[in-house]
Length: 478
Image 1 (cartoon, helix red, strand yellow):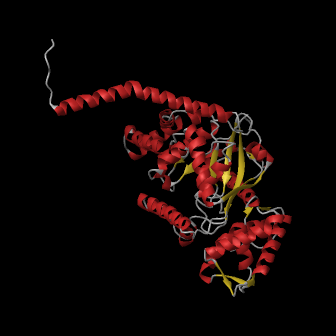
Image 2: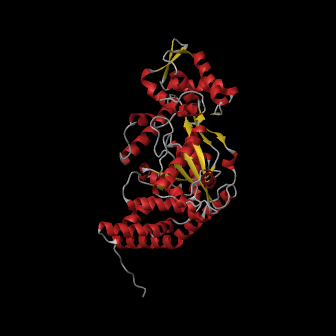
Image 3: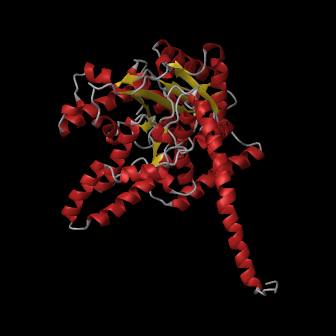
């Protein structure tokens, strides 16, 4: 019983590794999970005391539970049955696709990541590039939300920075869930966005199974009280203007709405604007084409290239800065009240009637977004410069820009520089444009747009052109 047993070294190492794994699995992993869960629960209790939209149970549920619920949703199963009959395949074959779609789509929201690490990352990154501001927030947009009310932030899509900007500025009100496009299917963006509560979606797919899975996820999440953030125009603006509304997600959200029930949907129009858009030249180079689908190598390489370039410019003292990033929050729209005022009964509409109602709602919300568009220094300077082909004395350009801002302020626009600091803000914007090579000084006194950069200046002027037209402060830029 006391004799020695001799083992080969390789077998001993294998047994030791298995023993260590067993100890980790049964002792350390449960303890680590308990510690993480404790920290997460502490964050949930803390933020729920301050959030005006409390974290719903659905948002805090296990990802596996949500995937299973979505996969076996009754409406999804009905489409599986009909598609199996139409395609002449087994139900099991289609269920495999449904589960794959659900796993690709469903987020893995983590309150600790969102409110601690994610908030810190968004704040640090944004402030490293921009002066971040909320220029205007309607008092009702910041008021507590009644029970049985879903909140949907309806946002223009100016830049991929919109995700960070609105999330950061709205973090004390709600934990927003975005529908993120194809670029988020690339690692590591996929994992980060899922932890932040984003659901990853494909665009322009004709698969009825996929569309039904997406539709049901959006509907279930909204009805469960998950605060949504949707980009009204669907894609990044290629010309700087707020584009026509895309009706897909908006239609999913409103399709099952019953105005006679206690349930309501509150739409909050949000307008974002930037003195510099990170993707500006890529967007202008792809005005008539879709630059999605270039693959993970393009996404990772372009992101890394941008970051390295900005770091190098900062280290060498040649960084021009990005100016101001701003988001304004307009007056909320109750879908219950909107339906009543417009005589629309969503459950009683046929397919064409539903499309017309959703389109009407989309245009109404789009106009509200335009009305709260932040008026920033760079778009104002670009507008003043493009109003003439001749060089302007520096003092004359500042005078014209101030006149434009005063005109828009009187008409009700939200100008981000108060009158006392207006001249300094314009000077800063002009320095930014000059250092970026979009405008050039002539003779030390005159300023003119660089001819090759006029399309880019027009892009920035367009961001406030629709607002000028809407409030009667001039013609919208083309």
